[in-house]
Image (cartoon, rainbow, N blue to C red; front, side, top):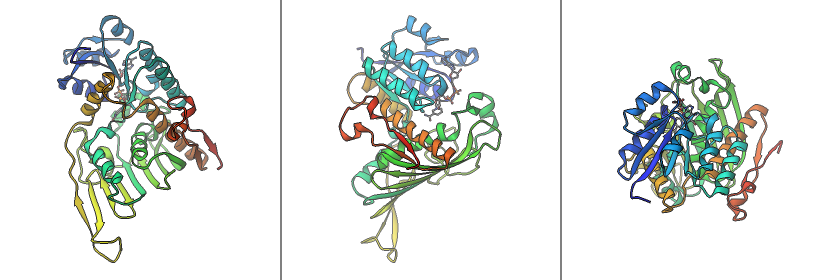
Length: 369
Ligand SMILES: NC(=O)c1ccc[n+]([C@@H]2O[C@H](COP(=O)([O-])OP(=O)(O)OC[C@H]3O[C@@H](n4cnc5c(N)ncnc54)[C@H](O)[C@@H]3O)[C@@H](O)[C@H]2O)c1
């Protein structure tokens, strides 16, 4: 393989543009092609200097690529993902990996059978502040992680939905589109989910999905996380509005994750580590240390990681299976919110060291447990 890794981007929309620009900026990568059926979007894409095609077939027939980032609407992920895997092309698929876990399983099974790397775009795991938070937690800085409080509130303007009507349809509400990021991070920090309870409220704008939900996740470790998500609340507390990952969102100095342990607590993204002076004691002063994380664009770091996975230099950080597991938690949240009942999630067998990376690793859900 030549020194430069040739990456194509399919879907030149909201996030596809950012992927294409990130790939183009990185000297280790080459933006090999853009696939976009919309004429106006394709004209914009042409400005990046890469060849543009109207369909995947056309692109694969005309250019050689080492990997592809799939940033098309989620309902297209399964069909296009299977097509890309059949072409033996390594694939980084945007989150959520698919609309349903059954579709996601089709993708992970096909990738495994074909021996094709499949990654999912949960880019927050590539953010240096997430890495720093994870290493603090793993080093015991807050003692035993007991609880996480997550807020994911923002107001998506009407034109966000008008320009891409798929965003108003079933499967594209904030539980699936936004919360899947937070579920991935919560799994990263706390481990696998044991059970889920949830409530949701219908969209005040009349869309097919909820626009507000709250979930309570219990982890196998015993930790408990509470999450509240809404795309129709005007507020400063969300990853988008605080993490400074994407300049499109004016940043606030707030935090959206509070992580509590037996010896201290951590808020992110402001990375403040709270501890009492000596032993934990609510009658002794508690103060915060500001931790430092290097700056860096997570989409670029993710693209570089994708190239290293393609070159077999490192294993996938967020594999298709990881994307599938997070999607299963999302489905459990949807199920719990629709039924009002607790949903128990079975232990993934891969986590116990048996039958890795096959269909048997899936969670099974049970109602009324
Ligand atoms: N990682 C993130 O932070 C992040 C942010 C936004 C969206 N997403 C995810 O990325 C995906 C795309 O979301 P978006 O908001 O950018 O959507 P979008 O509607 O803005 O863009 C999708 C683009 O795909 C194009 N497209 C449609 N059919 C296609 C086809 N057959 N082949 C190639 N391109 C096609 C559309 O014309 C459009 O330009 C979704 O899965 C979404 O959940 C991830």
